[in-house]
Length: 315
Image (cartoon, rainbow, N blue to C red; front, side, top):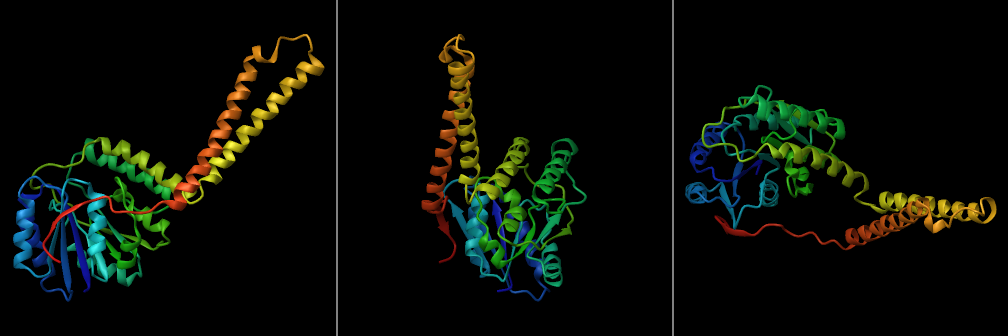
């Protein structure tokens, strides 16, 4: 199997048949043995019925249906786990990215010995205010934090070597940062390919403007967990120890000052400085304990699937 095309979707009944025909036409004369894996993320329209019909008529089509909507990250995770191709491509089901780009991206991946190649919608056909400007700033921040020179981190069309996709662990909305996650796993050869962006033909976007605010917070979370996630005690323990020592030293100073320098001054317990020092000691101890507990949680954490599959079109 040369390539597995993973398509996560939610309520895309209007575009599915057209997309499947487009994929067949795009790869018909290409020397590629391929499969298409549709992941229905809890759609409440007729998407799953269409996927079952497509799978019955084509042996290289597979369908997986979630019992409810879990999000794109979980849909991609189960798609990656089922993929059998040497290369794995992802594609959105809204017809805004062309499957014709996939063979070109695979060739570029091979020719340049890349681990991952991401699409870049250089010319976009969507709202300037609600999509293009926020997307520009989002990608700018992602470039600064990650050091990866990409213009479109969240482009739905990407091509990976199999081992890259299989090594990535996605949760929440982290599908937007797949290139960063791949880099964190040691896959540093990441390229970009300019793709044609189509205007949305059916329905409307499933994502609201709040995703950009959440996106910036996710980038900070990703940076923090990569830097300190494996050894949280290095962060919490260091901060806690420093705060604890500062509090102790300040308390000793207040006591020394009362006993030997300014003996006629008011009691230490009546000074606000004493309570500041006390709070610093307590916070320092709590940070240290937080680091210790985080180390235990990481050590005994057991990874498990965060989704429930309702039905498959294959065994």
